[in-house]
Length: 198
Image (spheres, rainbow, N blue to C red):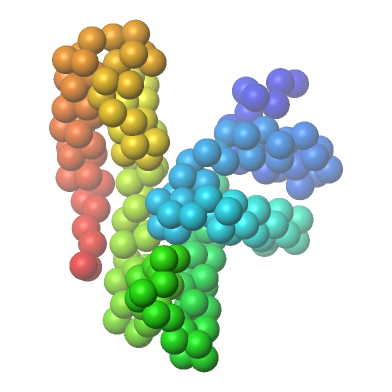
């Protein structure tokens, strides 16, 4: 049985039944998306890596306890765990600020580390995170050529020139694929009726 051919649900079942390799396949399949999701919020590679590792420890513990609910897909569930850890990080940062006020004259000053998350902000952040999680799921429904352009442009922050060189296509082709990716994504958003309270 080739583990790579199994879907997420079967991989989880195989892992829970004692095959450690199954989780390795699951991790390799989704790690880039989950890491990018965390990094886009934190904008700090070391911290994003720490939160990413913490997220996977939680995921492993939940799976081993048999507490994973198979109603939802694995990726949105894993993203919610990562998103909650990001919110925890910002909450801790705002508490630390009360003890030691940060000065804006410091070079390493980061406005996000001193923002206080009141109830309204926490709710808005959760709503936005939920929308982002669903958006990541929708990107998977795009044709591969469009999805690759979108990921390289939005998540890897590559220029269209660099994308064109990497894909061995013209800049106009790269721009065209991006345009169609956004049109299709808009259609998917309408089809799935994604809305945010923000």
